Image 1 (cartoon, rainbow, N blue to C red):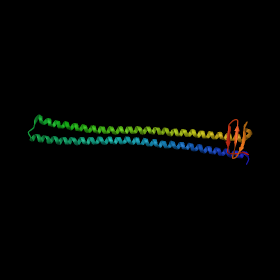
Image 2: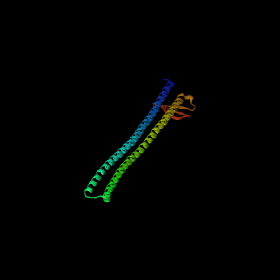
Image 3: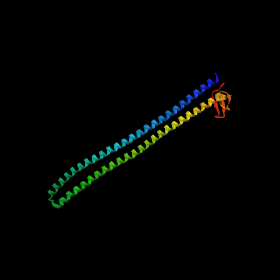
Length: 211
């Protein structure tokens, strides 16, 4: 097989190999970017779910507090009714009776305030936990998106480097194969290949031994 044909086959093979490698690097970067975007989306969904859960917990706590306060008022009314009956039976009237009933009312108000306070604390804790969890998840999502973007950029750089390297190798092979077409070039044959020396590209080894 004549030298130009062998050279052409070698160049074609090298170009194909470089193209496949570059495409593989591009696809790898694209896949990594897609994976990181998936993780970021998942974190953002978890952050939204945490917020909704906190809102539901707050609603439940406030509703339970309102129901307990309502029940407390009913209990107080019954207690005050029983107190009036008992004081009437014992002949207790006037300021003393009113003081006892007022004390019962005030105690009930304190209990109601305590119920509301506990509900507010529970709501605040749920919202605070959701906010902290949401911040952490969204922050991680941002990092995932950045990592995906970086992976894609790195793949683009690697792909470009591979294509440039392949182009350089093809140019070197073409220069060596043309012999006199490259000033000051020498070709030294060897087993299984040859060493190519040119003033423009320096020394390289080619697996294709030209005749």
